[in-house]
Length: 507
Image (tube, rainbow, N blue to C red; front, side, top):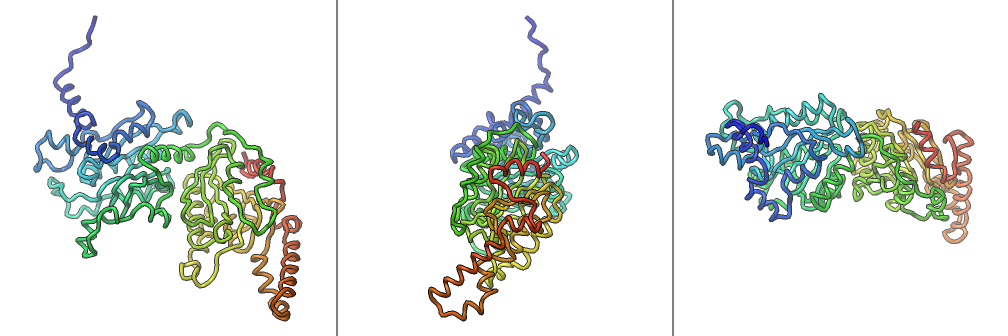
């Protein structure tokens, strides 16, 4: 029985050198990760990509520290110079053929705390260039401590600020989808890469900041524990994280799920009974409801992935599917500020429009808003700049857009949520409960009939006149009247919503 050729010395050397980059020989580093309840970089890689699909670039790189460390220690302690890069497929069973091809970079915190060194940056630049050339979606894990001062072999620069990694990463914007994932500490340059992603996923143990403790203390700004710098709950509250994960396994699952929307059409999901949409809204027009229930009925079963749920809560943003086709969703949440679009919600909606443009996704807007949130406090937050920017962003969106008014569509805020004008969407429809006006009914009555109301003493008589005037305004602004004046395209049975959206998106 033939045993095959005997390995040459060169082959044996290669096998040994490669083995020293893997977890089996890097036992101490692996044990340290596991003792924290974390996975190794290669364990995350294995979970992320499809089996046997990964082709690694730069596996044999080591830190530029040959004059500080002996060769065997250098290979084990600085394996791959702290970042695993390559190409693979993800979700091939869901999105076959070339649509599953991706580029990957996974920081290895067990190598010099995931810091960025000389060859490390060269590896990033190489895989960024390949992603741009081949138009490969990119997934990056960013755990690490930022720039590395200890690469003593480098004699050709001083500060290294001519590094092109950050500009190359930014240069992929709008060319390929970019998903960033973080667990643990992520500071300085690592945080810059994380924050520039299209979708940012962080575990509950993440701390992400534009400087780490040493830099902060060195700048005379005080001494802080790493956990105090950019804790993930704070980042979620200000909208810096799109998806919060329990741990690395959950974060990896979320990365694969969110990536799937950029990979295109999948098999259609199950469809809920669409007649249930007829009873989603309360009969009392002043009562709130959860728009997520509408979304879960309207779109394919279990296809709704909400982004940034605790930030800008007057607007819900999500990725979803309808008949397997991916869409970006912007929906009013009347449970917060009555659905009034405040500064945070405006930023959130605008950034969802930007994501739809980058990923070339159609947009579905589900609107129930009294308009923009106004007043001195809102203006102090920059409303006069942030809210008009919604119109600029929407004007650059070229994918199909369907506007569906569930109930209220008032003022500039309603216009902004459907692209800047009721005529901007490919199709603008309303449920029968729809009501429209230049501003909210109650405000319009108080402003337009101020003299008449003040002419009556405060009490039941004034209240009765107020309610009468509101009722009259409601009748004038009903959806059927708006459709009769051609301000919207149609009024539909809620159960027809899915079919109307499909038609509006040309599907």
